[in-house]
Length: 137
Image (tube, rainbow, N blue to C red; front, side, top):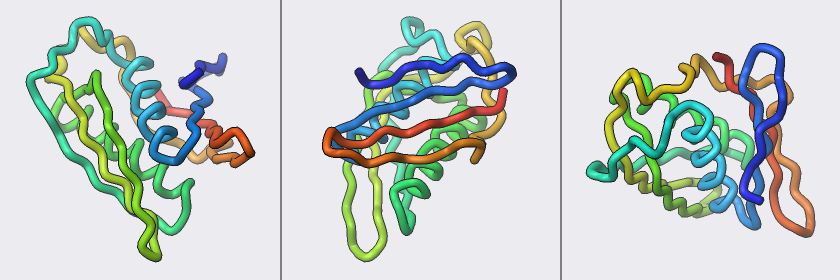
């Protein structure tokens, strides 16, 4: 399982899974776009690269999701294909290549406002990573 949506009273919440931090970031992007966009209507003509860094896994995931939200809000961009790479050089760096296209209003299911810190976190286990994310709508 890559991700699953959690019932939440006023926001969108999901758990996301990955065997590595890179896979967790990829699956978080898939969950984000699946929650807010009719992906069957998105083209694949545009590629966008993103880079974020942080002192720990949680900060990297938080910044990663905020970068997706920024692209959604300012460039009306949503991705169907996501590649993520993680490097550790004192700080954790994440590089993403997103392939997708521009949004039109009828493609948007509901509009995200903010990535929240409410119950936000990552758990590590022998199986890999699990994160919980709530997005304000």
